[in-house]
Image (cartoon, rainbow, N blue to C red; front, side, top):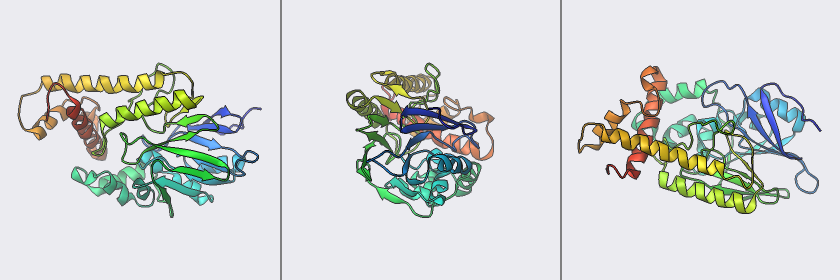
Length: 320
């Protein structure tokens, strides 16, 4: 049976009762992410469950009209593309779940500011503007869980998989009976096979590339040993035993390391770490910051600073 059409949404059927949803046009760069809808199934769940589907209110409302009621919404972590519109699900009656400690970012933008330690480089009004551009609105109540917890709703079990190289409490979701692994924002961001995105994202102080590589290995084992389908926050559906998403993520990290190592060999030698970073930031290795203005320049400079720091920690060319 053909799925109902909703303007500006791409809906892909993974199984007869589980869908992957993507908002095509978004209000700003970091405003939305793809996620799952677990539709009702006899003797499993009577109401629909949404997993990490951060889309604008009008599309949440359309989904609720067709597939609702939505009883439960589960968030993977607190980055802006995963929290901006979650309030829309709450407004229509869903109970919101999110991992600690990032659950607080859903209820207060200032907690988003504190959680990722923006204050070291960015003033809070910049983050207010960032939130406004992405249409962030706070949720009223969020129930927290610990990464690694098994969540059960009616007769469906969802295993949360800690993938903390990306964010302090970032999780993926494994549905063992349905044989689906959703790796959330681990870094598989190819919109189509062969078309590269940015790859794994580690532009915050709490990120760790070594942990990231361990997370990729962990997700690969779970997928190959227990799943038929792989989904993520910014990509297409992959069928087992395709290893290309994991090869892609490792390659992107390796290529980024090579960029930083090459740049390190071509800057003025100095024993001062912060001076090294400043020299590297001027090279715009990852982002065209010189073309940016106002708050975007400060935000991208913050992200690139921590990407550089994380790669220098891994560098064999130059140690801190």
